[in-house]
Length: 147
Ligand code: AMP
Image 1 (cartoon, rainbow, N blue to C red):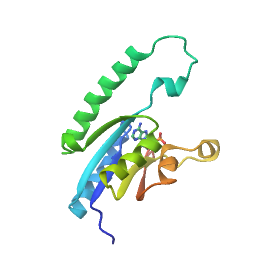
Image 2: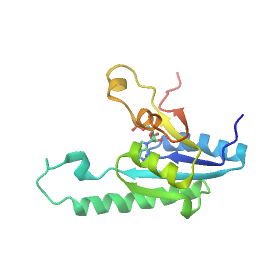
Image 3: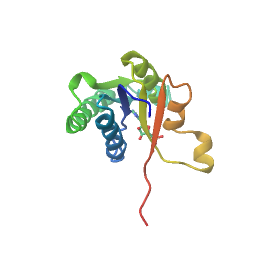
Image 4: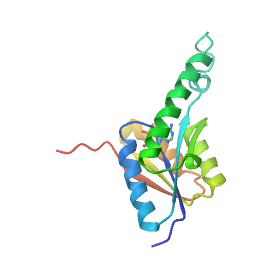
């Protein structure tokens, strides 16, 4: 099996992040390699454009503060040092690609809901990350309920 030296895990900070990160941590142990994590905040101006006629900067700051706290707690629980915790603004797919290149990651780990039908056509973050990725991508199935 190919060795990985630096894994980057994308976390959306939902409960499913735990499953995705568990897999990334198992690979870190298996390869004895470095693990970084990233959470991307989509700017409200990008999501809503000029549709909302009000100043969104205060709400955006609150979102950033909350995300910063949650990411720090989450990453510490995985023994990821502060230097390897990344909080970035932009579109998740694009920013994950850019960061992976910047830090020299050779594997990106993201969650995938294995969507079907319309949701599949509309795409997902995992699909977006896969297309044009600068390195290998592992899509960890999440959101599967036990019967
Ligand atoms: P989604 O397609 O949005 O359900 O997300 C699938 C996976 O993409 C998540 O489990 C994360 O690994 C990654 N992801 C989604 N949104 C973000 C985000 N804002 N920042 C970092 N990773 C994300």
